[in-house]
Length: 270
Ligand code: 13P
Ligand code: ZN
Image (cartoon, rainbow, N blue to C red; front, side, top):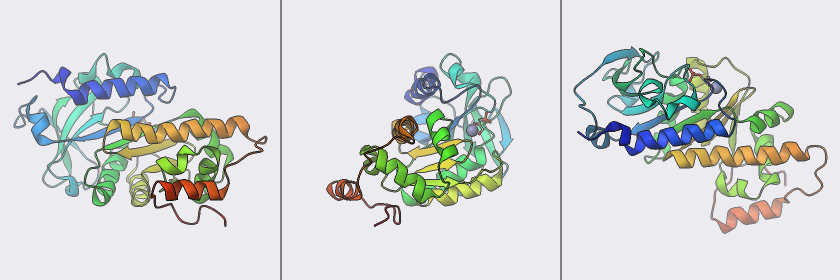
């Protein structure tokens, strides 16, 4: 067996969460990540027949039966993951009936996966149906994105338009736009269902007054989506009330045509 502490998925998770913490996005235990792993890659590091304990999923995750995930622990701080991954992370396999998860490694102090597990798993189900290469769901609390969401309409077309108009990268990086949910109680099955519904159309979903979800086929891709929204939200907030030059519709459309992208409909007004 290889040393799991050297596994690329553990090393990369430590680096990514430390980076997110340094961005100021993940105060205290804010934020959570789930990363779907291939059975063959995990089998190089762990005996997959050895289940440490089981943890109820809290909803029926049968569509993910047998799938293995690396997931941040509830109440755990992103700033501590790199120095102690075995306490702050866990590797779980969804049971055949989808009602519990088998812990294969981690949560060493008796902990469990994030309280946002339903939103993560339901988002994986939604994104995998659209893109079989999808692997990562990332949730975080980026400062400027939350500030922009506080002063901007929760209409996802308006929110997407403001982003597309503030930075030419935006339509190229997320032509599918940003889905927006209203203020809701987090950690529930209900918010999980609502998030997954938005994930059918978008790879990024904003939770009003809370934070953002980004998805992708690897950690870099999910991070890059959120990073682009956050950078642009910062520009938006720095210029709020002062903007003279916003990106015209023909430039936004021209970028989408140049990169052969399908844009979210109804965002641009003309
Ligand atoms: P957890 O500590 O349960 O992951 O919750 C953090 C969070 O961001 C809730 O939305
Ligand atoms: Zn959160």
